[in-house]
Image 1: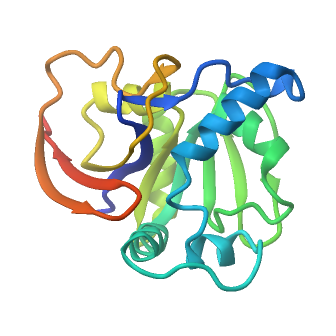
Image 2: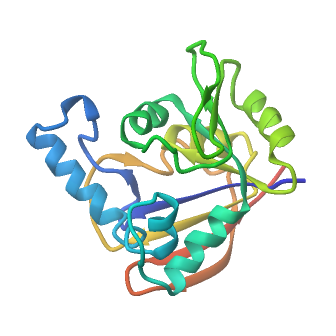
Length: 213
């Protein structure tokens, strides 16, 4: 059976998103601030060769452990699940050939026909909750795994429901001092075991398994 996982970058003080992250105010000072913070959080992935090739933003790029982790994570994904807010932000920022190349299930109250993009990505809009989205994702994933892409609220919902098998964090040496915490509203019932820690020059990669009922 496919594994359910998430793999995200977090600040050293535990935030997935910096304060003021809102594309509705693009061009205003708050946008410039969170954009810079967002860039610092993901500065480890932006130079990697696989990331650059996948987004078609130029040849070359760095190899090494960060690049290997990016590629191995991408290769295991058969399906992604995300929330409507993440989709709304991405719809404005992703290139025409969205960087998933798999089915993507979007949790939303909006009723909408599937949105087919070049390069193998199709967005499906799920109106009846996280378990329904996961059932559809399992049917579509084949022999690959299911990534909970985000945002934080969606990850938290799957953790609380004990539907996550494992997760990886790229802990960046930045402090946000506010924003959206990755593990807010989780409680003490979600247990984890440390599997692996890998240090790179830019971040610390940590992988955990989650306890299941």
